Length: 182
Ligand code: CO
Image 1 (cartoon, rainbow, N blue to C red):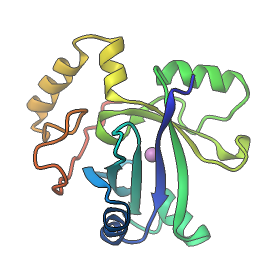
Image 2: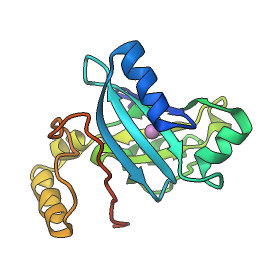
Image 3: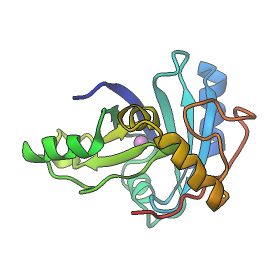
């Protein structure tokens, strides 16, 4: 079940320039900035006024990364669509069972503590599709999960506040390096 559009991912050459565009033209607010080494991107999430969906701006860490190759091939623009799902593992099983190739057989770390997985654009009309289980959904499905995560984060000395609640110093630049736990 797709609950809603969680975010649109937009590839850009300069994260700063893209943020400037979306804040000055649309008045969106940056709620999170992260570097995701595993996916080879620097990214920012900007919330729409309803706070239920986001614009995800993606700048590649290098040419030889998925977004770097996308920029070389297609230029700046829409990169993927992310849909919120209640359970990303169940969603992978369901859509994989319906014949869609899975880029990720198992979920990995996404923005703001989400669990994410990509579906192959070749089976979806050319649209790279991301399934997003937001942190809130994990908390709902598994009470106490958030507290355990915070304990782990504290132990690993990761910055706190990159979950659901607006982070302290909203809009401030922060870099979150996530541990590889899977
Ligand atoms: Co995304």
